Structure formats: structure tokens, C-alpha cells
Amino acid sequence: MTFDQLKHRLDLYEKLMRLDKPIGTLLLLWPTLWALWLATHGQPHPLLIWIFVLGTVLMRSAGCVINDWADRDFDPHVERTKDRPLAARQVSPREALILVVVLLLCSFLLIIPILKDVWWLAIIAVFLAASYPFTKRFFALPQAYLGIAFGFGIPMAFAAASGEVGHLGWTLLVANIFWALAYDTEYAMVDRDDDLKIGIRTAAITFGRYDVLVVMLCYAAMLGILAVVGWQLRFGAFYFAGLAAAAALAAYHWTLIRDRSREGCFAAFRHNNWFGFAIFAGLVGELNLRPLLAS
Image (cartoon, rainbow, N blue to C red):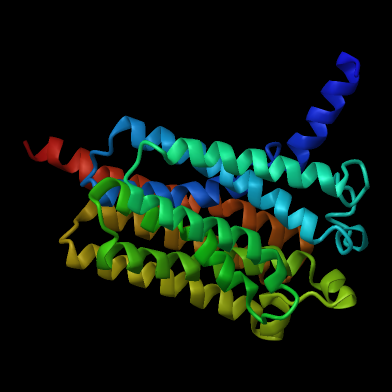
């Protein structure tokens, strides 16, 4: 194999892992960082941060490959996915499975230094990531299942940082399920027409003409849960300013999705990176800046 051929294969693998589209990694990363900061009262160990950041990249990449392998016969019929390497037959299913194994092995090596309790949670996380693509065949709300899969870094982060998940960790996971329902329904609204033709189940199809309303209710439920968490932990202005900023961003998303255009719905989905960042910034302000200002 020549250098140019090798470079071409690596480019295809990069696209298969969606490394050229980091939004999915960021949507996985923000809840994990929320959990790390909350579990350590704003003082996570640098090693833990690096393990979970790299683990997020690896697990999201593995999830993308598994998803495309599972959907390899569907994706050629969807406008947005027809040019993906597996759909375009540029990468073989066998190559994809080998790549998944390599990514999962690298992920496992990352968590070896962490408490063994996290290992069991990691096994569950792998199962969730591997099974999610198949839920679209029979489950009316696969986006809810995705919320669990995308949020499983939360209990893992709590277990790694404090030795237990606790009520707070599971509450954050529930909040993340509502967030995933919101942003992935926006994502599903982009492909609604194609998904109806090929028989894929999505929240956008299940909710029908109430899709925009349900998206906004999911944002409200997620922010409401986080507001209760903040009240219970006696957080102050920084934290609630972060939630207020996230609420303003959710209102902006309504302006993007209300006419259900492909472009607007996809823009709203991508914009959720800033939603997650706003909440994280509020946590950093509350747990790291507020004590400095008070001293």
C-alpha cells in the first residue's frame, strides 16, 4: 500500500468515526464534565479529566462506526447519510468491525487506572452504544435510549471521582435524557421524510405535528431538573446565570425549528454545543470562581 493509499484509508476511517464532525463528541462531553465538576466540588483531578475527555472521543467514535455498520443498508437511501463511507461502499463491514474493536480496546486501556466499579459501568456503556442503532427498528422513542447512552459518562464520572454514583448522579442522567430527546428530535426532524420512506422509527415521527412543542417541553424539563439540583445544593448566581443562558439558547432554537426546515433543525441541533457549554460555565463559576470572590 502506497502512502497516498494509506492516507486515503485513514481519511475514510476519520469520516467513519466522525472526527471531522465534533458536535456529537461535545454533546457527550458536556454532561460528563458537569458530573466531574459536581462530584469533586469543582476540583477534578487532571488525570480524570484527560481520561474522560479521551474516553469520550473514543466511545463516540466507536458508537458512530457501530451506528453506520447497523444502518449500512438504510443510509444509502437517506440524503444526509448516503455519502458516508459504509453507505458508499468505500469501507467494508469487516473493516468497520475491526475499527470498533480497536477503539473499544483503547477505551478499556484508558479506564484501567480507575476504580473497578467504573469497569462494570463501562461495560453497560458499551452495550448501550452498540444496541442504540437497533432501537430505531422497533422503539418509538429511540432518542430517549440515546439519552441514556450519551449520558452514561455521568454515572461513570461520579463513580470514578467519588466512589459512588448517588442520587445526584442518577438525577443528572435523567436530565440528560430530556436534553437528548430535545436535541436529537431536532436532528431527526432533518431526516423525517427519508425515515418515513425506509421505515425507521424516530421521535420526530412519533411526536408528529407536536414535535416542536415536545422539544421545548424537554428543554424545560431538563432545565427544571437542574434548577432543583441547584436549589438543593444551595448554588447561587453563577449557576443560575448558566441555566438562564441555556434557557435563552433553547428559546433561540425554537425560532430555528418552528418552520421545520431541514437547515433550521440541523442548525438548532448543532447549536446545542453552546447549551451544554452554558451550563458548564455556570458550574465552573459557582464552584471555582465564587469561592475565590468570596475569600
